[in-house]
Amino acid sequence: MLSAIGLVAAALLVCFTSVGALPKVSRTGKYLFTENGQRFFIKGIAYQTQGLVIPGPDNPLNQPSTSVDNLANAAGCTRDVPVLQKLGVNAIRAYAANSSLNHDACMSMLSGAGIYVILDLTLPLNGSIDTTQPAWSTNTLDQYLRTIDAFEKYDNILAYNIGNEVIGPSATQSAPFVMAAARDIRAYLNSISSSALVGYAAIDGPAQFVDNSAHYLACDRSATSATASIDLFGLNNYEWCGDAANTTFDGLNSRFADYDVAAYFSEFGSENCSPKPRLWTEVPVMFSAPMANTWSGGLAFSYFSAISRGHEFGMAAVSPDNTSITTNADFEILAAKFNNITFLNTPAQGSASSAKPSACPPTDMARWPVATTLPPTPDDAACGCLASALSCVFRPPRADYMVLVGELIGVACELAISSGGSCAEISSNGTSGAYGRLAMCDPTIKLSYVFSQYYELNRRATKACNFSGNATLNSAAPNTNIAAAAAASSCIPSPSAVFTPHAPPALLPIAPSNGNAPAGGSGPGSGSSGGAPARLQWTGLGAIAACVLAGALWTLV
Ligand SMILES: *[C@@H]1O[C@H](CO)[C@@H](O)[C@H](O)[C@H]1NC(C)=O
Ligand SMILES: *[C@@H]1O[C@H](CO)[C@@H](O)[C@H](O)[C@H]1NC(C)=O
Ligand SMILES: *[C@@H]1O[C@H](CO)[C@@H](O)[C@H](O)[C@H]1NC(C)=O
Ligand SMILES: *[C@@H]1O[C@H](CO)[C@@H](O)[C@H](O)[C@H]1NC(C)=O
Ligand SMILES: *[C@@H]1O[C@H](CO)[C@@H](O)[C@H](O)[C@H]1NC(C)=O
Ligand SMILES: *[C@@H]1O[C@H](CO)[C@@H](O)[C@H](O)[C@H]1NC(C)=O
Ligand SMILES: *[C@@H]1O[C@H](CO)[C@@H](O)[C@H](O)[C@H]1NC(C)=O
Ligand SMILES: *[C@@H]1O[C@H](CO)[C@@H](O)[C@H](O)[C@H]1NC(C)=O
Image 1 (cartoon, protein in one colour):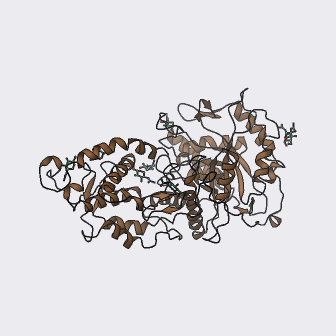
Image 2 (cartoon, rainbow, N blue to C red):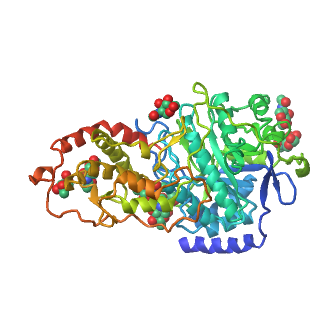
Image 3 (cartoon, rainbow, N blue to C red):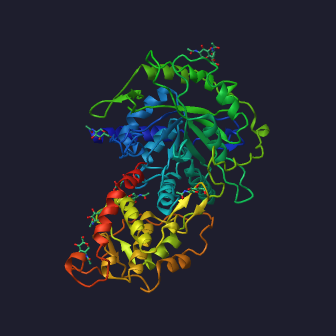
């Protein structure tokens, strides 16, 4: 069965690839144009199999904890591309790509069908900037760059999204980190001569919040850095319900009339209104004046089954053997609307020249408590230098250590602080714009830094570098007398540097260190004279209990 699908895939590949490359799309001011000078609108659909959602108090937003890379599924694309063509789309949005996999077949089939891809660089769990504990760090940057490197060869990449719903109405402090990601990804794309757009998909919310988010990501930073801006502001908007009045979007239109970069709906299609099926009466409104004078289209949600708050947004059901698709009435109605759109072709590219970007929304503790200063570019070399110089390092007890690192940072910080240390250098504050020297490093390096401080403050007693077996002495450290803080200043001399990131290092699993942890017990229970305070073990356990909440928060996104 699989090889038969493979054969069809190969055949489709041949027939689609003969069509030729899709025209490049670029942004001039607030409009998108193809290289032929036509205005370009995104007329698309979300194309993403929903990951496994484990609901619970730790997961109020029902975030998935696993991901599916639909663009690596050649048989799935063979099955779906003709259905997408029937729907009349020119773009899909994929939410989770695995850079280790091969995407040639899907990307080629989509290109042959005239379909661009808007690709989220994020992944579930730790593969995104965290909403509540944000950082812009080497691990996230490298994941983004690896994904770009895996997709840049395709002619139909329209945009890379650097985040989805990261900035929230009560979590605005993540905005500087999202903006730093946009800045660094733009610089990287420029350095490899990529014309892909840099996008962000925003959660809808109070007007002032949405407007501030939009302007923060597109405002004039020329005084402080190279021009950095997103190209494409996506709004996940479910405002239009059922057969709503044509005036529904009027407020939004006037608020975005002066927006400086392209804006579109990165998700739309409310399920909240009866009667079902969805009527999609917003579609002709979105693609004609006056809305099309301000917006550049949208992505209907969703091709695959997607259940949110009890509503099913899916329009194409996959058969149990994965070989065929059954579309529903939502799909048929949307297809009729999408296939009856003529794109507006004004203004002409020549008269759409970019206006001067607007000023950045100022920090306002009541309404927009967000620093205008951005965090630095994550620096793999500097963080790597530090990792090899630290005296006591994290030893991952298992491959899936993400939650554990969050917990241990909480535990180790309490212990280090009670010994006279500090966690300021691993922390950031997106409201004040204070970014710790190590805040850009991988969480495992931050953890090792705190372990090292604690170990050094406790007279380098062997058992002060243990943390229940999660820490080990770093036999590779050049000089065991260098203190963690001194190593940090020496390895990271310019903690606010902004530069064009380089291609990321090869993907290597962090091997558990075989350092010089003694095989026989010299721990608190073993009675040896290590010198660690007797209350270490007890304090550690207490702190672990106290940090469960922090750890759980850390794992949210
Ligand atoms: C990506 O694919 C590789 C190869 O199949 C796999 O080992 C890895 O776990 C995947 N990564 C994610 C994040 O799913
Ligand atoms: C709403 O707008 C659409 C598209 O512009 C148009 O076809 C339709 O007639 C309008 N309906 C009303 C009630 O104005
Ligand atoms: C169908 O696809 C899903 C997700 O891609 C996969 O988990 C499942 O095992 C497949 N089922 C069959 C019968 O191949
Ligand atoms: C197609 O679009 C035109 C212009 O908006 C509209 O007048 C017409 O009713 C639409 N036809 C269908 C079948 O929706
Ligand atoms: C997320 O955590 C896992 C370990 O649980 C790690 O292998 C992976 O590299 C991390 N990803 C990022 C982007 O930090
Ligand atoms: C971050 O900075 C703001 C403004 O200076 C301050 O009010 C807030 O308490 C700081 N947050 C943390 C967690 O330190
Ligand atoms: C590491 O820390 C966790 C959480 O404190 C603990 O449960 C575990 O036993 C420790 N050691 C190892 C080897 O996982
Ligand atoms: C480290 O902690 C583990 C678990 O608590 C214990 O078994 C081991 O003996 C300790 N090692 C040292 C060197 O203290």
